[in-house]
Structures are given as structure tokens and as C-alpha cells.
Amino acid sequence: MALALSLGRRGMGLCWPNPAVGCVVVQGGRIVGRGWTQPGGRPHAETVALAQAGAQAKGATAYVTLEPCSHQGKTPPCAQALIEAGISRVVAAIEDSDPRVSGQGFEQLRRSGIDVRTGVMAEQAARDHAGFFLRTEQGRPLVTLKLASSFDGRIATSTGHSQWITGPEARRSVHAMRARHDAVMVGAGTARADDPSLTVRDLGVAQQPVRVVISRHLDLPLLSQLARTAKDVPLWLCHGPGADIERLKAWEGLGAKLLPCAVRGTQVDAADILQQLGSAGLTRVFCEGGGALAASLLAADLVDELIGFTAGLGIGADGLPMIGTLGLTRLEQALRYQLIETRQVGQDVEHRWTRSLR
Ligand code: AOF
Ligand code: ZN
Picture 1 (cartoon, rainbow, N blue to C red):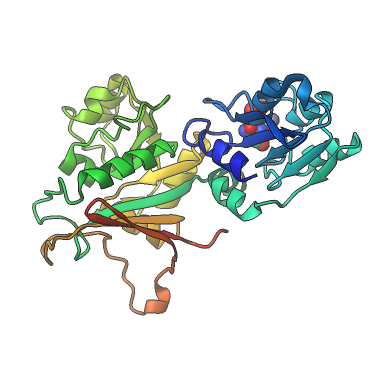
Picture 2: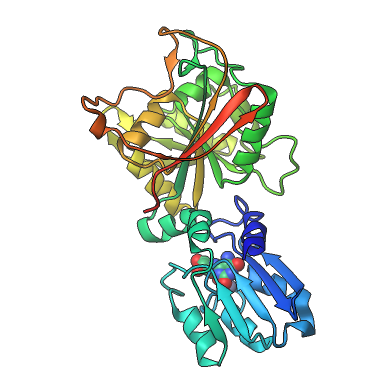
């Protein structure tokens, strides 16, 4: 199952709106098939692993990180494929939350006499499939918030200069993280200050993550990296109802997809942004700031994982804070995250935190 989980992770960021599933077929103590959900979401992991196993699938055990599907999609259900291949035992990590499957995959397998066991490494599988589960259950993608800051928690100087706070090793690690998400998201302030391209570079990815920029008035420079690359790599713009029609047209002409969102107070509503992104199929979103967007996501308790990179320099109280104002008066009001991991990356420290799974 550990191998199936790591195979499954290869599909992360590439197979949305489908979950990134892994499958290993074992015959007489030997691995005869490995598979993972393919880019675009099809074929499913089991189909790939069974094709590799061929006749050796007869009487074999299949390890899958998610309940095999039972619905007729563009190809027959995986439960049916496992039955037809003569698999005698299925070990699964966790039940599928898709209402078309949800228990019925296991039911189909059991009805045809297959020995089914589930709940193996379920906690890890729940983490890996969290984006898919959140989207099917709550309509929104999983949100990872990554912020790189100075030792004193600043993300830029008072003039907005932020390149580069962390070193090349940390930045490389960020590109690998982007690749494991369906989309990379920033606020308009960051887009204006950094002129980022938000692509994955030097890793040879099969498909670039979608770039999402949140800008209430769509007042983003039309001469920018994002604009220049909008035809080649998807660019989605979440804007408020009052955005200027000429700007809407200009961005559409450049190839951007426009997602009108509700406004809450003076900002685009964080919960609505995520609902729109979920409706458009995203399951895992990697937010890279800035402070205002980070604050509105945190204020709505919509950040599932925090990743911080801390560098050894001080910027001072006139620098831009990592997270905008939250208006808290008591510490009990602050959301608590649990530490998952810390490690040294070049000259920086990476720390990852999770909000308990929900
Ligand atoms: C599996 N193995 O590798 C994946 C599964 O649109 P379709 O027909 O491709 O079906 C998508 C659904 O299939 C998705 O919502 C989820 O329930 C399941 N994904 N199932 O047996 C896989 N990716
Ligand atoms: Zn399937």
C-alpha cells in the first residue's frame, strides 16, 4: 500500500478533477503490475496496473489507494475490470466519497466473491485524497498556503521588493510543490509587485498548473509575464462584479478565463473564490500570497496546509507582513495548526503545518 500511495502521488496536479490513485498488483509475492491515474484523469490506476499484469492478474491481490469505481464512465468501472481480470483479493485504503461510487465499488467486488479489505493506511490516503474529498463533499479544493519570509516574518520591504528572500534550493523546492497542485494562486498585489510567471520550471512537467490571480477590479498590468504567457499556460482571473468591462475584454482576448466572484467587505470573498475554483474542477490549490489574500483565506478557515520558508535576514517592522490584519484580540481566536515536518533547505528552514483533517 505504501508503494501504491507513492505511485498515486505521481498523478497529483495532473489528473484533476479526478483523484490521484495508485494501484499495485501482487502475484505470489511478486509485483506484476503498477499503475496510477493518468494525466487528464483517465485511464484509472487499476486499468493501467491490470494491463501491465496481463494474465498474471488471475488469483492476484490488488492494492488500491481508493475504493475502485463502480460507475460507467468513458470506460467500464474498475470494479468490473478487477472482477474480469480474475483478481481474488482487493486491499483498499479508503472509501470513495463520489456519490456514484461511495461503497458500491466494494459491494460489486464482494458480490462476485472477491475478498475485500479496506482501511489500510487510511490516514495517509485521506491526506493524499483530501483535495478530491473536499471538492466532492464541500465543493471547494484543498488549499496549501506557502509563504517565504525573513526571520522576522516579512515577505517584502516597504516598497514591495521581495526577490529573493529565500535561496535557490528553497525556490526549487517550491517549483516541485507547484507541480503537485492543480493550480497556483496569488493576489493582485503580488502579481503587480513581482510580475511572476507562476509556472513550474526546470522539472519537465507533463502539464503546467493553472495560474489563478485574484483581483477585484482586474487592474493588472497588460504588459506582464502573466499576460504574455496567457495563451500557453491557463490563466484564470477571479474578479468582483464591478470590474471594468474593457479590462474584462482585454484579458479575455489574451486568453484568460474570467471567474466572476462575490465581494465581501472590500475584497473578493475567499469562500466564493474557492467554490468557483471547485466548480471549475480544481482539487488542490497552492496559494503563494500575498498577505491580504492569505489573511482572507485564514479568516474564513479555508487554509488546510501551511508551508513556511524562513530565511536568515531581518527586514523590519516597515516591511510587508506575511499575513494581513485578522482583527484578533485573544489567542484562542487564532487557528491552531499541527506541525508535520521541519527541514533545512539550503540556507533556509522549511516548516509544514496542517489543520486537522475535516
Ligand atoms: C478509480 N481509480 O484511478 C480513479 C478513480 O469521470 P470518470 O469516469 O473518470 O470517473 C471519475 C471518478 O472515478 C472520480 O470521481 C472518482 O470517484 C473515481 N476515480 N477511481 O477506481 C482511479 N481516479
Ligand atoms: Zn475506476
